[in-house]
Length: 473
Image 1: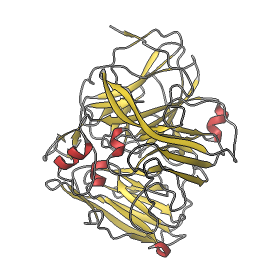
Image 2: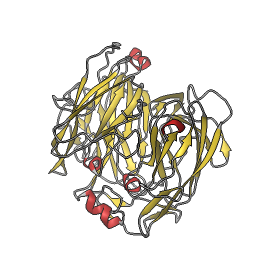
Image 3: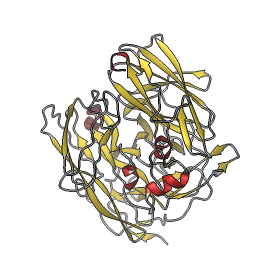
Image 4: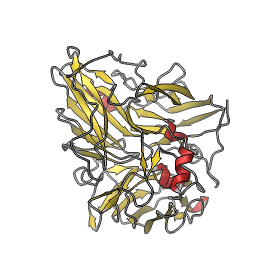
């Protein structure tokens, strides 16, 4: 039996995850207020206390208009310290929103304290999240959208789909059970080694979560977004999960991939199943059908569990019953999409000034994850010089995939395995189990920058290092 739509979600600030369609360049816009506090959401008819990251008047996330500068005052209303990383932005060193030792590490924002940020904004679909301890697991993460001039001119309705995983258990307890408590972490019910396998090839899902959320809701009570009949839509999908990768299914909506991690790609037809690694973003364009309700679903790799939202025209009064598992478990998220998309404007071709191998390793028994055989905070920074073209060969020697994120830069994927090609521009790339991915970037942002796995448990258990410019090493 289809379920009747229980509410009408209004466009604008009330939903917190829907974007306005009007756009005006505001190069000297006033400073934005960003508040960190707490809120309560409902998960399975049970109240859950989580964090909130958004404007003072409520909602989550920030939306900037084309040409607007990133001028933000962060207000920490918590009784604990924190710091927010601007995932996808390329600020100057010292404004990245990370806390660590070293020459460009920032001090934490103290309880009831504040901090100002001011730098040129990078257009595109990005997100922001805590980069301290295990706070991200309790939803201290939100969209960070810098609307593109091209998107604004199109008149398309912008819709955000923010994915997350949720556990009722304390993340520190889970990290301790995994064996990585000596480093730092997040979580839910845990799987001890050996981990579940797909086809005997890959380990998946260190943590079994209690719920998977799309715009803070499960499929038992999905977020229903009203869309004009026949309207042009830009769907911005963000995988903000701490330790979960998804396969996207646009269903009856025939989408075109427009951007990866906020960077335009040559438009390509979206495949029926679309892999999305932790930390990654994808933009899709499509025209809304004339009538009906249309689910957009995300299935957890290695399981039949799903989450998602529903896009519905004004005359749609019912939606399909969605609160059920998929017919079969999804495979491991892979690089199939990377082989289909390429940057609209990639790096200018030039020889690499240096090429280095970055080896990803781990010990499941002790739950320690390493880069070049070292577990953070022990590290040997990767040295670069200003102006260099740098190629990193990311070689994964483990039976688990690792979504690797580079701070302060965007890179182009230039090799999958032993095959060279010109792929998409990204800031986060999946390195498959026992696989190899090559990335290239220009060393144009001096400082010391983190390179780490965006599976929070892997990062907190050691899979993190630094890219250090020679003058800041």
